Image (cartoon, rainbow, N blue to C red; front, top):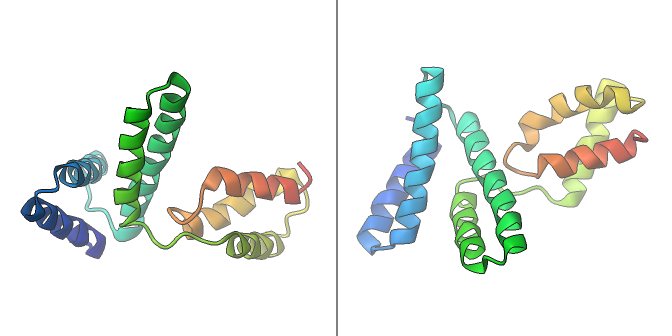
Length: 149
């Protein structure tokens, strides 16, 4: 069992002992998403793959929050925000804007990217480093701006 998966399992036990039902429910959603991906891929996921699952869950919730806010459903938006906070407990520390810019600069120089056509090379280099630590769509927009897109 990966270290991250063990931490999630321990957190479920702690939340159950504390009687924190919303936290238990969110942690069970996390384990179900991990288990589903393991079944789909027929292998046990490592920490990096689990971080990718968690990052996807956060992205889905952010999209839901936007829709709930537009529909005037503050109660559902607040529930999604609470779930994001719990999921973020298991994600690596987010990168600062300065760290993201520095990584983009390194990736552009390493790949020799000169135009928007080279954006895929830069993103493929950055994606593993930034998965779960930065909003990849925002990173993509920054790269596009740097490459003159």
